[in-house]
Length: 281
Image (cartoon, rainbow, N blue to C red; front, side, top):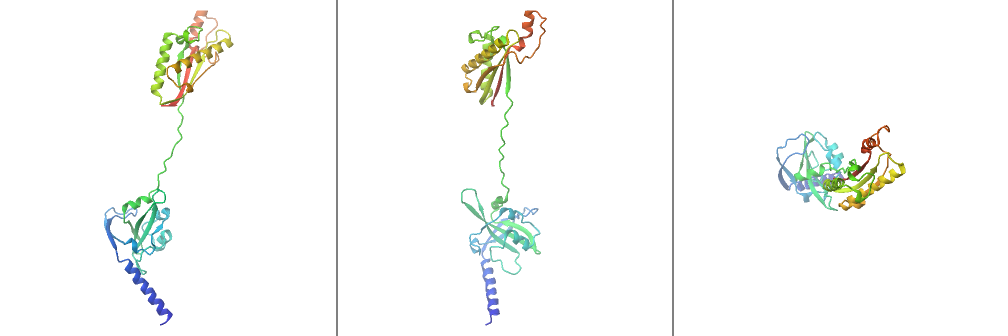
């Protein structure tokens, strides 16, 4: 017997063996996952997974698998996902079957899926999964984009100092009933509006009457009194800060030609306490 004869017999035996391996399996009703294919289900035969020559399947490059579509030659399919894993026969097979492994994301766990490419007139025409859920592994993973929270602009409150304190006074004992009521309501409002208070800045202001040094100390003292009062009403001490700017930030200008009572009344908006509040609402 010649070597050529022996080789021919070996090839023939291999063909028969492969054909025999492809003879077992099961039929499932499923739809082609090819783009543009009909959603109508068809009876599709899949070989028994144990008959694959590539035992255990292979971990497929998902990006390559996503590129499989209709109208591709066998060479083009093979370039993307390699040779079929079952014995469909060596001469003119119309179906290529594969075993693909996919990681589940739970440690080393993976699942094995059977995939079929059906050829018609020499090009790919339909693709099937034995288990339809396997197609989900080809869906692009949605990465949740966590956007950095944009801090909201501080909320501002303005309180008239003349309503808070007796004229030219700054202590807790000098606070007027109307002023205490304003601060009580403000504290309640902030506690109800904010889940978390990060910063409460109390800023004292005065008018320009008197020496600038005295006005600076008065503005600081009034801001500190308001801060301490709000702490007593239950606002977080760590979030509260107080400082004064004296007469440096007026909101109105008044002529010196006015009589003193009229000038005091005109400058009233400059005598104030402001709060800047920030936190999570």
